Image 1 (cartoon, helix red, strand yellow):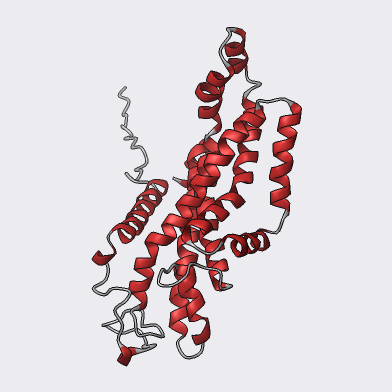
Image 2: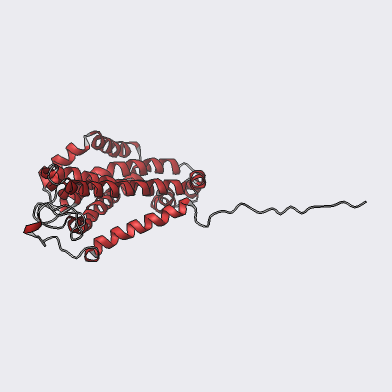
Length: 290
């Protein structure tokens, strides 16, 4: 008696070489590369300069010569947006760096210190957060001026409480773990424990917060500029371009749309980067996204 057998070929499901998670990383990388090139080499993206005006093309609609139209002086709107990228980036990056320089070490110290010092720093941070953000920024700008440097410092000061509270909470949680207790038992110096053991383990959530703060810096600068508290001419940011367009909503709607869309899209890009970093730190979310 013969038994006929049939071989069944088992083929694993074909998985794409690049999942959606990886594709998003590539697209975000390209977007940030474009922003960086705009900031460093704006001349690569436009044949004009911000000061190059055409009196015969005032508030001209988008055309082949001016893809995004012209402003009230006859300057190319796309050129102004491109050249404003550098100063916008300096304010966003600089303000977050200032917040990090203040909030990160103070958060580490407060999370590892005695009650009175911890309570004092936490009270200052909470009081700053309790004050309305834009109102506080307006008061600070009115006091210290509207130069790019003062705007950067003011926005950085507004951000430091959030970094401080995050690092404080992380430090308090990590300092009770067994490996930290073991380093104390063997006599490690507190500074060494903070720098070599607590800081590397506490910095993960900070990577999610930083790009979101950069997005907020862009939005805060735009809000202050719209209220007439932006950087003075001839310097320009996306916020000052938006402020200049407010008188031409009816006659030249494209002018305001370009500035508003630029601010919205770049801020959304940074927010999305924060979400992507959070996904990469969570294996379950990353597996579902890929």
